[in-house]
Image (cartoon, rainbow, N blue to C red):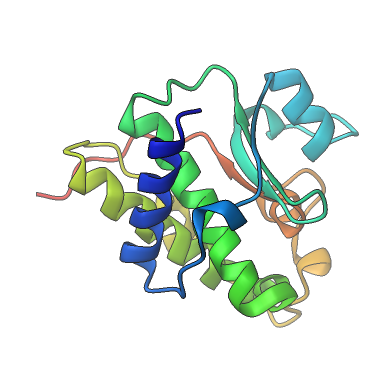
Length: 173
């Protein structure tokens, strides 16, 4: 991937998130992978719904993985890297606390989706992502493991952070 694109995406993630900046050299490596490899990493037990995962920040492996089918010249596609770069910035700033419980996870994802959508608007794209978070709540037991059914998006997002393929949402007019 072009170093200038990586620097630009990092700049957009910093600008729209307000999180403390990091030098581009401190970003984890970004690796394109096949859908099968992504599924093996995120859902080794072949959980339903894993096929929709487009990109993830692997906190344990300190890398960003994304589907090799994404066109990095297209802002809709590279917006998924902006989202994951936000998770890198969040993790550097707050560490494991971003995954502490369901509420923290929803806040973490909410910020990353807001940044991704701000980037998409800046680039003139009509795609909007993360709409499902508006309808997601945490129960009285806020631990991620207790709340997430097997194979659910929340379960797959507890570690590593992963984003699902977007659902088309009408543009904000």
